[in-house]
Amino acid sequence: MARFFMAGTNLLGGATAVIRGRDAEHIQVLRIRPGEDVTICDTEGKDYKCRLVRADKEEAELEVIEVVPCKGEPSIDVSVLCGLPKGDRVDYIIQKSVEAGAHDIVFFLSSRCIAKPDDPYKKLERWNRISEEAAKQSGRGMIPKVSWAEDYGEVLNAAVHTDLPLFMYETGEREALSEVIEANRNIRTAAVITGPEGGFEAFEADLARIAGLHVCSMGERILRCETAPVVALTALMYASGNLS
Amino acid sequence: MARFFMAGTNLLGGATAVIRGRDAEHIQVLRIRPGEDVTICDTEGKDYKCRLVRADKEEAELEVIEVVPCKGEPSIDVSVLCGLPKGDRVDYIIQKSVEAGAHDIVFFLSSRCIAKPDDPYKKLERWNRISEEAAKQSGRGMIPKVSWAEDYGEVLNAAVHTDLPLFMYETGEREALSEVIEANRNIRTAAVITGPEGGFEAFEADLARIAGLHVCSMGERILRCETAPVVALTALMYASGNLS
Image 1: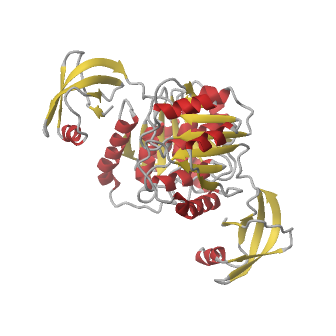
Image 2: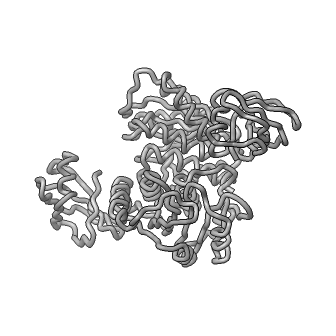
Image 3: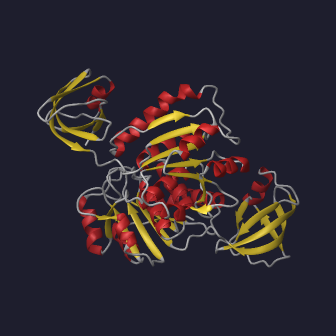
């Protein structure tokens, strides 16, 4: 069923919902006809099951049939924090992390980043649009926010304020990801930090360790920078009962 | 360290290895200098740590330093079987499945496939080259084979001959993936079947159920056809201790 987000939706069964702008156009593009059903999500975890009454390019009117909790939200909030990769790998990380259940996504510059955008804040609008599209398509109950962290200290600080801060690293002394997760079963929040194309410098891993993060290995296979967040997120979702 | 595959390598420490053709060119492209180390994998689970002696565009000569078991191979063999998606999603599934530890990858046509290649066998060379590149980069000990199955019965048959045949389905009566995996801990082989863009028809899921596969849910979030194999594979790798 087609799915739309409407921040601050607050409608009871039997009420009328009105969709305007880009989403109204999208209803036209999808050729949804009066009498057909769509879901409006309030971006705070509630789904409004609606039936289309009438639609034109500017506006769609819908009847609210039922209000139900959105099942697409995982029971844990996982922040994904990534050293900025090049080009479309960013888009890929956003799309797949949203599908896999990320709560929010943060990009930052680390020593080995090849991508050096002049103004990363300019990219945030596009990045958040990718998140919104992925959230719609995968049936999420909220739109994971994509943001930019100015500095590595800020990234570590955000991570250590979660119940389970994880730092993915490819060499040296590390804990096994599965053992760390098994030893921390009753968490509500977690953070996953992954590096750019060339990974992290040793001093970056040392700083993470000193800050109290678990420096983790995901096994002997080397994962690409755009694959690592999705694999780590999936391990967390699996272990917390959110893949069933 | 740069990594090359050499089928049928059989060299002892102290011996000389010779690399010719495309891989010799690749050594030039990577600007590897005499005295620097590279790994040659015999594609059967053994790694030959070698030191470059001399190289030109046609041929590279290396001294074998040490022969060690390749650590990049998971302890379980998982076959990934996918209803053929459109365009570069195929490339993506191959690359990410190899990184995530797939043993082999099979594509097939199911009812809702949009992609209808005239001759899928013509694509196999390219698909296997993507697998080889991903295996090199991720440090695998073998090159997962990519193949084409002519018929859906063949796909189900391949799956039921593994210890844990899984069929990923988005609606109706399903078992929770995590519960199925937890109930089958001591497996050596598994199969993961996923659908194309539009998913599977009900009759395809019914056939899978009749054939003895576990029809599984991966939660309430809808995964894209190119994301589902990687998520299922990661759940299996996590549960079997191959993500640590």
